[in-house]
Length: 201
Image (cartoon, rainbow, N blue to C red; front, side, top):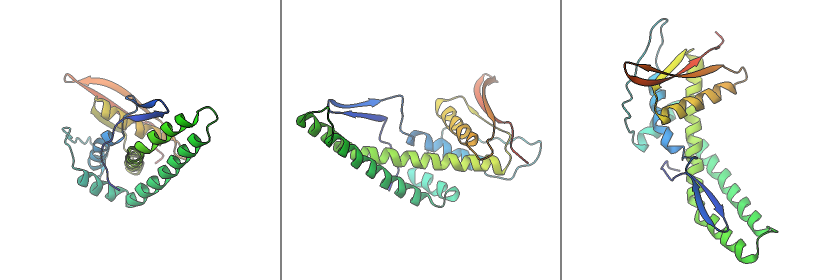
């Protein structure tokens, strides 16, 4: 399996294929997640603040995979498992289309053709999502392991999305970790801070 951008969430029906532009492909966030992993992965000392200038650098796909494998050694397994799962889901969609009591035979065929037309798109999008969340899990593990108190990034949508995902994963731990996010301005620049409230020592 490879990583590549495909696009927003498709809405597939017997009348055609539309796209929900509010549900972006997780591929667009992987670059930021990988760079945050690199930025946060070092020794920490009390009362010291660390800065890392990401500069919106675009990593190649090979670099993203290589870096991620340092934190997720089972990345290939994760991608292959997701590929298998989504193939199963697509088969289920096709079966449901075939068994529909609402659609006539022509509409069923159109729906099945539309699903098959989007097969590779659906697979790639799901694989991208699995890789993104593998990166987020790795980020959450670093936050816990190193007792990171806060992360500050530029207030851009992609950074916000990644920090919000980390927040969600931390909240779902066996011992949930409370966090909050705040937006503030410093030296004329809009920033967002993910503050970790309760990591057990």
